[in-house]
Length: 288
Image (cartoon, rainbow, N blue to C red; front, top):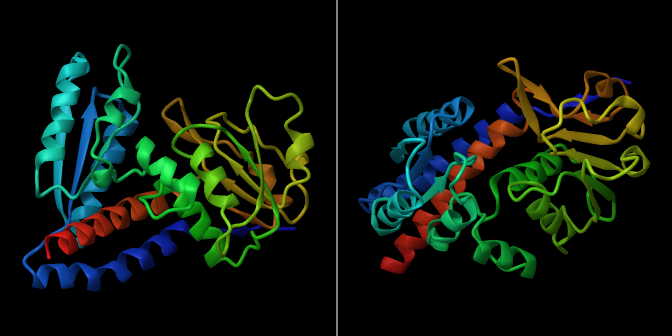
């Protein structure tokens, strides 16, 4: 068996193209969506990722606001930067890039973001609304994963999904999203992590596996039921190279698989832009 490869690049391109008409409607009213980023420190992968987001903004005609603080910034300086983004009417939504340098509290920073400007969908208010099934910005990677499964017509409703990883950005919001009684969701979800013994005893029963542990090659072919969909959402950097949570041999067993490059990542960025556009549309509606 050779797995069908999820083409995240193509799906992301369609999402961005579909946004252009909505962007033009805002432009007719003299409005431009604005995305902000706050980067603390000099983490190389984070800096690259932030730059990609600003490149995306330029491509779509968004305004972008890039605020960078040194690694020795204080917590008060970080909170002041967030307050500036909250107060800036040109910023419709923004992110506080993770990870933080040691000694700074990411949770405290995240909680100080205006929930209406939460581009990542990670503010406690928005996560709570997700649990309730109410409208709110949804975390970008989980939203992208569900979109990927939907577009490739991978059955989700009533199926068993195993998520490896319980992190704030993927595992926890994705588990809630996939259990909601909505079209293309409504699944039975099991969340495991690297502290669980015999992870394979769970993954071998799964119709869909989402690996989001940041542990290189943790999912191997013998842990996958033939024909299952496998999504590599977690990556690590080893000797300067991106390494997937999913081993290469899984492609010989799975029915669908996301590639190490061009899979989940482009969709995460596309939904960050869409979350920002939706925030701009809400702001425009509130302004009349």
